[in-house]
Image (cartoon, rainbow, N blue to C red; front, top):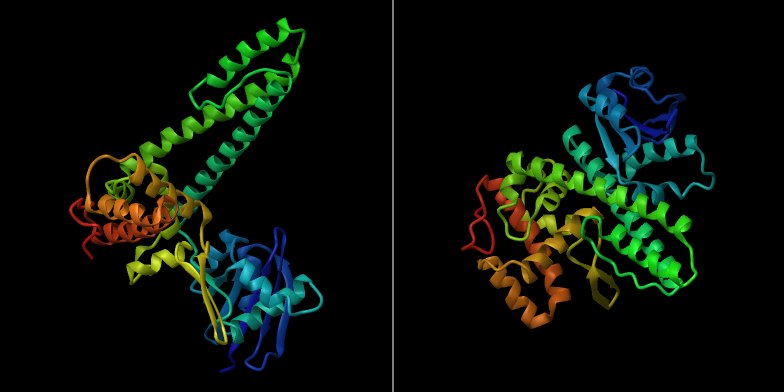
Length: 351
């Protein structure tokens, strides 16, 4: 039976599909709608058993990919950045050429690209809410910085405070002072303050919902028994992993989140750099934040904290918190796998 590899270059409205044989010869090409029915119609042109692999870039048409996987089509998602490097070999950048390149990636370049795990709908929704919160926080900080800049530019004294309603109170006090000096910037500042306060209120509501979700979620509740790990860290870790059985060795979770040193080796030269920073930035950031809390704020003794404190005294807090973040990731995986709460007597969890 003829072996076939298929590449799907999915767009918002249309998908370029290409099927090639074992010699790289194009068997069929088509531009169809980005819908499950349209793409399935293209795939059903070939016997199901002949399709060796269907390659799609991650993050595009996830709903359709989910349907195709449910229909038992052999699909693999490839990391966009790595796939684009493979596709860049072709001189002309078109949807058709990208579909051909993706099919070739499945046929000859399986070790070149990095496959991506398609998350469950639950985890995908969690990450959407976490990303929305992150966007709100960033925009709130920018808005607050703009308000502070305007007030300080006219001689006012305004500090950053995170308490609820603090920005509005401080700004009103400073506007009174500026008006007495003949400066009126009310019309410029007040709308920005209202927007910043509204975003702050939304962030607080989201945090409240996150706390309730993490408290009632069986896995996240157990992850929060690890010192330093709060609701957001538990949720982002759980949603990033999704399926704990993907990690046979708990130590592989460190490289997965880019928390292990990068290595450059060529000829006789070999050097070790900083952490690779691969994988999910948000989860890595939360793990480092949790490690910092464990080192600085947590008072309750545990073997894990003692390990981090000893490392901090030896190499400094900057490096120690990254190493502790990697250790935390391993501990969290083991707690999840063992289905037991964290034991403070151990610097890790039982396998």
